[in-house]
Each structure stands twice: as structure tokens, then as C-alpha cells.
Amino acid sequence: MYKAFFGFRENPFNLSPDPAFLYRSPQHEEALANLIYGVHSRKGFIVLTGEVGTGKTTMLECLRDYLESQLVEFAFIFNSRINVEQFFEMIAYDLDLRCPTRSKTDVLFALNQLLVQQAQEGRTTVLIVDEAHNLEWEVLEEIRLLGNLENPRLGKLLQIILAGQPELDRKLDAPNLRQLKQRVVLRCNLQPFRAQETIEYINSRLGKAGWPDQTIFTDELMREVHFRSQGIPRIINALCDNLLLTAFAVETKEATVEMLDEICEDMRLEWPGHRLHQRPGSDFQSENLSNPLI
Image (cartoon, rainbow, N blue to C red; front, side):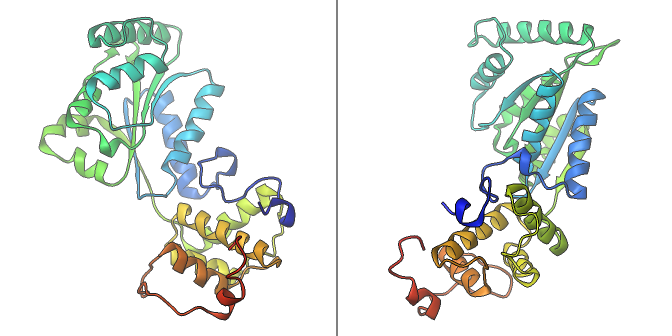
């Protein structure tokens, strides 16, 4: 809606994960490097964790792009609210296994055949599971057993990446999953941004959208966005997108803290030292009540 007004080629703060807008902070570079290294080195089990909105799915999208560019076969499980039967159906579908998908035995035979063939050709195969903290215990046990698919000469035939919220780590600490936990050889954890990283993140996305020397957000405003978002990229995106929309609605090319106040109230956002409450309409609010864009 506001792209033409600001001269953007595309929306800089889209909430959908987009590898093209990846901000390569040191921790994100390290996480992506570990994922790629784990796949190529046939490490078996890799775990990626992070709080809600810290960029786990974006990391997985970047990994998927890399795997596709390298012609690496992979299955991507994006809906983890599944039972064992559905789990094997999704693997068979993603890997295009020519077998009855409702038969676990047939899927396992076809999968093993594919893995051996790939390994003999010097290739590996990857299973990626997003939102893995939601997986049922029985599905996690099946995933552990898939880790047994190996060859003395070729090593681990299937590289398994589990991504999820910190609850995944706590789940793996459960006594009945100790065998799975012991097989995890690489762990990556994404933390919220520090203040300077938030500023660089916002500037990076605006630059990639078409405004490299942006004057929309002052450093003071970006630091305030960092504080209120607590450095969570998803919340940063939501705040900045709404700031741009509000600025567009009042026909200005500079966002303000007053706009941020209104947006935080609308989003019912809370941060340390702030208590959510209903405030009387401010001058900015009352001037724009009739504008449907706000």
C-alpha cells in the first residue's frame, strides 16, 4: 500500500520468512553455517532452537534454498501436529517415494533404498522438521529410529534437522528421549537481537527494499523499537510495517515515537516497565480517527 509513496521495490517488513531479506547477524551466519556443515558432514541429528519470532523458519528457508541449489534431496515437515501415519505419508510425498504411502513398512523400504542410492552417488538426504516441539512422543521415537539408517562405509544416510521453540530442548531432556538426545551432535540457538543489531536489521531491510540511506527512522526511534520488541525480529517487523503505514496515512516520510506509542497500544504490546492500559485519545489519534488507513 505504501511502496510507491516511499519508493520501495517491495515491502521491507513482510512477516513471511524471506531468505532474500536475511540479515546476516553473527549468530544467524553461525547457525546457517552449522546447518550446512552438519548436512555435508553427515552428522545425523541437528537441533535448532529459539524463542518465538527469532528467525528459525527463515534459517530453514535459507537452508532449503541452499539444498535445492546443490540438488540435495530433502523432505520438509512444516506441520508438526501429525501422528505417525501422517508423518510417513509426508516423507513419502516430499521425497517422491514410489510406494503405498499409508504403509509404514513400504515407506521405510523405499526410503532406505533411496538413501543408499543417494549415498552411493556421493549425495546425502535431509529431513527437516519445523515446529518440532509440537511433535508427539511416538513421532519423535520414529524420528530417532530413522537415525539408525546408516552404513559402515557411507555413514549416516539421513541427516535430520529438528527446529523448534525452547520447549524442544526441554522435551529432549525427558528420560524417555535420552537416546535421541545423545544422538544430537550439533545444536544452534537463536537469541533476540542486541540494540545495535536491531538498528542494522532495520536499515538492512529498508536498503534491500530500495532505500539504502533511509531517513524514515531515526536512531532514537529504532532503539525504542528495539526496547519495546525486546529484539524479536517478528515484532520488529510488525512495528516497523505499522510505522510505515501510519506515516503514509498522514503523508509524512518520517516516523515518530508518538506513532509508535499508538501502534503499541493497538497491538496490545507489553515490554519491561510498561503496563498495558487504555489511554485517552492523543492529539495524533484524534486527528486521524476519520482516516480508514490508520
